[in-house]
Length: 214
Image 1 (cartoon, rainbow, N blue to C red):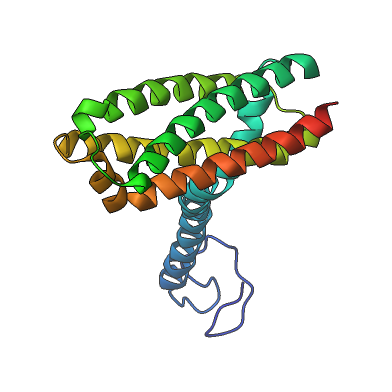
Image 2: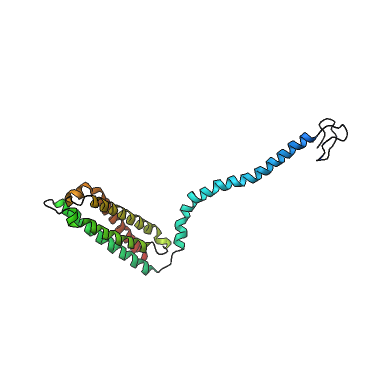
């Protein structure tokens, strides 16, 4: 560091030039402020990065790795045990599909039909919904082998779709207990059709996954 007035070399903490007496305090204070600013910069930049990176990790990265972590923490079972779980799931899906078809066929036949309450439509689907909950728990209880993971996830998706539409049918049925069955189904046909399509998709994936497990 040099004196701005006479060019004499100075010691860093000098307040006056030893040759010409020029005051140097202001320059030192400026330098100190700059140094303090650099110190604060070094402190706050990591803090700002933490506030940016933590939300990214929580909301972007974690949702992607969560299924992988959860799958690794589940118990590993044999292919025969996995197949048994899928067989039971398919059996329940077939029963639900059969009941759904009976309601659809009866409504399309026309003529005098029973009310939603008399037909116990709500009670029937509530029973199916409870059984599908058990199916879901079983299918979500084991570590899925990589070779069937894609089809397994698609089966889970179809199962959730079935449960969603059945839940809607149950709620609508509770609010329309005195409506004739045919009128009720026709007015809410989209839920019945969506459920039937999801059942078909589940069974297709079940066939594919069974082939891979043999």
